[in-house]
Length: 81
Image (tube, rainbow, N blue to C red):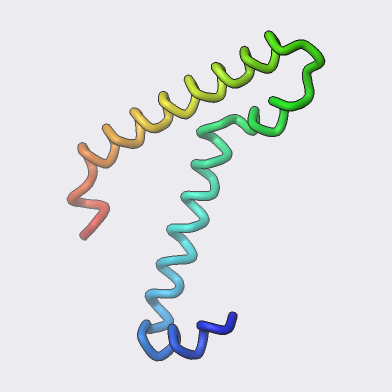
C-alpha cells in the first residue's frame, strides 16, 4: 500500500486491471496445480502416508507445469498480443 502512490504514477489503470486478471489466473492455477494437498501433508500420523502425499503433490505440480508449458508454447503469440 505504501508503494501505490509511486506505482500509480508509473502505470495506467488499465495495466493494474490486467495485472489483477493475471494474478487471479495464477492464483487459480496454483490451487489446481497442487490440488491443495500441501495442506494435508502434515496431517497423517504415519510418515509413509505423508510421503505419499508429497509424491502426489509433486506429480500434480509437474503435470500442470507440463500442460501449461505446452499451452504457452502453442498459444504464446496470441496470448501476448
